[in-house]
Structure formats: C-alpha cells, structure tokens
Length: 480
Image 1: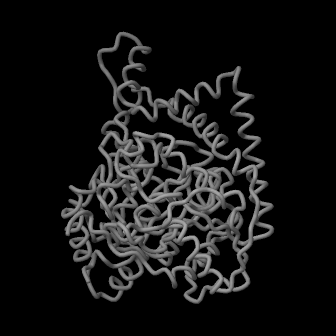
Image 2 (image 1 turned 135 degrees about the vertical axis):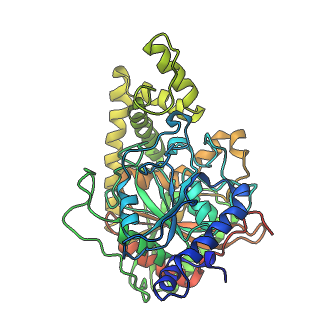
C-alpha cells in the first residue's frame, strides 16, 4: 500500500511509531497530486513546494498533509473564494480552524476549488475552471466544497476542510465517496471564513473514515471568542468508540419524503441501511415534517440571498482585490469591478437579495422567511423528541455529467430539500458512504441528521454503520 492510501488514523499511528517519516508521506501525497491534478483540477493554489517540517508542534496532526477550501483565510497565502474579484489577495490573518490545525502540526498542501463564494452545487461556478469527480472525471464532484472532497477522494490528503451553507459538505462527500460532517452551527469557529450566508455557514471536515472525522473535530471544535456564535459552557467530546452501537435508538424516516422519486441506487442504499440499522438494534420510525417539506427551500433562498447581498457589498475594488485604475467616478469603478469580478451565479443571487431586502418588500419576504425559519427549527425540535436521528438521502440522484445541470437549472435544486433544512435549524448532518452502484461503480452516500449539539453521538452512530458499509477506496482520477 502506498502512503497516500492511508487514512488519517493510520497516518498518525505510522508517524508516531516512525514507520515512515513526514517527508516520505509528503512525497507520496505530492506525487499523487502531480499525477492526477491535470485531470481533476481540485486546487486553486498549491502550497506544497516549500514546506518546513521542523516545526515545534507536538500535536496529533504533526506532519499530516491537508487542504482547505479557498474561502478559508490563510495569512500570506492567496485566498480567492474562486472569484476574480479577490484577485491576488493575501489575507493578513488566518481562519481560526487553520490556526488550530497548524498548531496541531498539520501541513497545508493547498487551497481547493469551489463554487464562487460557495454559491452552487457542482464546483463548476469557479473562475478557475470546474473540478471533476475523481471517481468519473466526466461528472461533477458536487458543490460548493467539491475541491476538498475530490482531494480526499483521490488520495491527495487524508483529510480536508470545507464549508456548508446549504449542503456544501454533505453533497460533495456523497458524490465523491467520502465521509463529510456539517457540524452544529457554532460547534466550529467561522472566524476567517469568507461569508456567504452568515447565519447558515458552517465549517466542517472531509475524511475517508468516521474515526478520522472524530480526530479532526477533536482539534477544530474549540470555543472561539472571535466568533459570536461559538459554543459556550460545555466541552465537546469526540472520543472514538469502536464498540458504538445503535441498540435502543430510534431512527426516523421523513413521512413527506417517502413518495419522492429517487434514483434506484439511492433507493437501494436506503433499504440496505435500514436493514443495517435494525440489525444494530435500532427501531425505524416515521416523523412528519410538513412545514419543512413545503416551505424550507423558499425560506432558505430568501435568507441566503438576502445575507449574500449584505455580505458581498464589501467587494468594491477600493480596499482589496481586483480594481480598475482609469474609472472617472466611484460609480463607474464599482460597476466595472463588480461586472468583471463576479460570476453570473453570484450576480443573480446579489440581485435577488437586493430585491428581497428592498424596504417595500422586506416584511413580505425576508422577515416572513425568518419567521418560517423559527417554525422549521421548532418542527425539528419536536421530531427529535420522538427520535434520536433522521435518515434520508443527501441527493435524489448520482452525480450528473459536467454541464448537464446547465441545460436544466431546476434539476440542480432537486437536492436542496434534503440538505437546506439542516442549515436553517443549525443541526449537524453526517454524509456517509454506503458502497458503490453496479452500473458505473459510482459511490453512493446517505445522510444522518442529529439534534443540536449531538455531533459526537451522530459520529458514533456513523461508526456503527461504517462497520457494515466499510470505507471507500481511493478514486483513480481518470488514470488507469
């Protein structure tokens, strides 16, 4: 087995027991990147050329390569959010999550591709070209954190970080065949994350085993006074329980989702996982979420676009990023900077957000959406009085071909109902690997949702499922 094929726990164990050196591990990962990157395009910026292994950290991640989604600020390293408008901007500070990883000894291999400002679900809305799915390079890896998911899937690194505003960790994890966690809102600091929808954004990890997710969360789930939403008054415990089981647990299916159309591989995975859960001693029940099933998508977009409109006002060409020198007025400069700097998807969401928050419409749309959001959170809270976890698809279909969603934009929104409500209520969601479908050997993922702050219990439930489904294999990235 090559070193790049090792999962995070195996890497840590190997480094600590001197089975191989950090340099040997780095060389293996770098060679893997050099072999596949021309096919996958997972990176916007690579940082693996000049690395110093002689750091003073004795942390658990010492010598472990990783990647960060390119909306996470890294001091002195170009950070673009996959947009032209940030140009060659190098932040004067780093995101809290990167400081925590770095202090634990992690090594940054690069900043990964994404949908511009995290707006999209294909990783194709990028000023730096689309990322391709390592399992089939004719297909999308999912978005918006497709670059990080692809990097982990292809064996570039044993783990990476992304962000999830409406499914942007869970969907790429499902499409690429890795594990991904969208933590409870406030569990991981958002400081240094370039904002899309501030009340919805959450940073989380990708890895190839649930145990690896637990290791990463034990590092990055720390209270941060720089983030007003950061948790207080408790200490998360992400200790791995190899004997975790689901005996006596209640796991729910959503009544309103049962008549929705699913691709056969997704439907088969749901049936297989239900059998696994029952074999583990869980009781399968049904919960009703009528408000969520009817109003969640409209509510999400009203809020997300309104927040995007506010967050993206700062990109004006005055203080940082792309600018023009020959404008005759501020108005002309703003128009030219934003016309060139923003892509079409970002522009459309800014315009929609501007309309939704215009004084004559604000009460009708934005304020109404905040009220519906409260109802959604309450509906979830009632459901979790009856059940421990909710099982559902991440998406209703396997990853589409690149460009397929450009021909049918509405098809891209079909996945939203399964992912967006989790962000609206601030809940944790685990995208987990279930196996491969037979026709094209594509990975199939499902999702387990927990109540607020149940992240550690959710991951141990994932451990119990993983005993049956196993871990994904390294994707070949189009190389035979």
